[in-house]
Image (cartoon, rainbow, N blue to C red; front, side):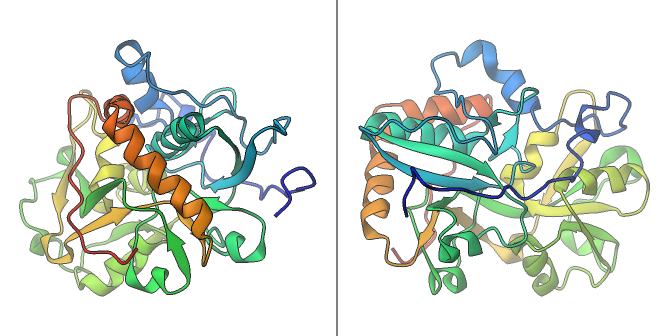
Length: 296
């Protein structure tokens, strides 16, 4: 697709971004919090300087690609207070762009229809902590996995007796992000039939605070970013559902771009850049080694 003539109609997002800055919210979670928490110790990690929805001038000397993200899914993709694209996926791609001498334009999009932008020709890459599944691999190509996570339910320890086993949540009301793989996985898990779709994970946590649900279902690599010293949130792993890898999504057959991303992932892992990025978004923890079998 032509990047110079590309004209993308930004899908309007009204999914709780203003609520995330409300200091009176009982769950005390903000989409930009992970970046703020680690800024002082990770100054050498790449920082994206792109504004969601605004395509900067193209450097004609570099190959340029359009990346779409759902910007309310920390730590993978969100906005800072100025509207800039921030997140684990944004930093990884920015580092790859630097290593491979290419350029990425980051554009915001709703979760619904996100992957379909690839086949419509509106984007080259989808990057929002996307899980690699056999079903998706039949329709799209993926980069090699860059990390993996566990399916889990987040609960609030201030809301009653602590849950230690996923079986204790049988038929309890659990929130999950609508139109996502998490919703499909929760439905298939058999944990509960009392599923409450919400626009974002943050709004699911708000529903816990409002006693509308008991927990939120997603991967622990997303949920754990909301655990802070001043709250009692915790996760219970859904061991029956196993682990799942994350990768960048490409249009089927885009082998050239896949090769660039795969080489870039290998490079930033080998030179330590990946570890710096990971520590920025997950301070004092280490990435899970990807062992899941995926078709490349």
